[in-house]
Each structure stands twice: as structure tokens, then as C-alpha cells.
Length: 186
Image (cartoon, rainbow, N blue to C red; front, side, top):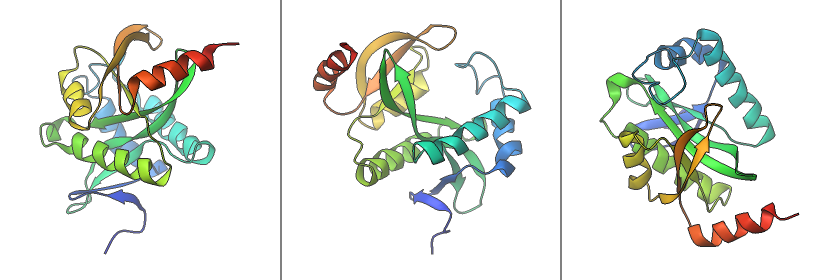
């Protein structure tokens, strides 16, 4: 029987909305320098609290946001995965993102969670295009994007640091590129 708070389940994982009491578990992941190597810096406890608050707002405003990844067999908090709205080059895109605690890397947790989110939100919200913003040197996240059926659409400067990021995308990339161009026109 499923835990009622799960938004979706995969073989090993339950994904649920963040709760304020997830702060200690999230901060344990986000304060780790290796885990946060592709972010500007490891997060302070306050930054992790703000991460949770942003997602609580996203659930109300967008109807979705990053979800806590819970190992069903143990109840262990493993990280997060889910869709968020990102404003990319003048267009609102739905990014599928993931972050998994370092001691559980190489167990395909991010891939399993991302596939679950892609399929769930594709069906429930009829989302046909997801992107993932991945630093070119982040080989692990690039592999996850490719395993879930994404391919490189383009490279952009992204974030406050304007670091190079690959935009991985699902769906009809060329058709969506034309749509992006139309939406930018006045």
C-alpha cells in the first residue's frame, strides 16, 4: 500500500512534496562541497531553508516543484527531483532537475526519479517538453539526462555567474526552437 503523501512512486522510491521538517536532511546534502560542485557554493542552512520555501510556493503557484526523494524500504531522504519553471532566454521552460546525496551516487537514483517525474508530469499535466540545465563538465548529470531520453538542444550562459550550461531537452527540439523564436517576437 502506498504512503498517501507520495506524489508518485517508482520501484524503489517515493517522491513527495517538501515539508519544512526536511531541512536537516536537505542541508546535509547541500552543505557538501562535492555534491554542490556545479553550484556556486555549498549552501548555508538558510539557503537550504529558502530552497524548501521556494518549492512550497511553487506547489501553490505552478502546481508542481521539486519533490523529496524517499527510499521506500527505509524512509531515507535521498535528495530531490522534479519540474520547476525556469525563464530561459526569454521563454518559460519546464526544467526537470535532480540532486542526490553523495553516499548514494552511482545507484541510478537520479535516473529512476527523473524517469518517474518525466512520465508522471507528462501524463498528468501533459507536459511534452522538459529541459535540464547541465554544466558541460557535469558528466553524471549529463548521463542522467541522456538516460531519460534528452539530447542537447544548445549551450547557453546561465545563472548569476553566467556559467556555460548545456540545455538538454525532450520532445521536438527543432519545433520548439521555432516556437521559442515566435514567442520572443514583439
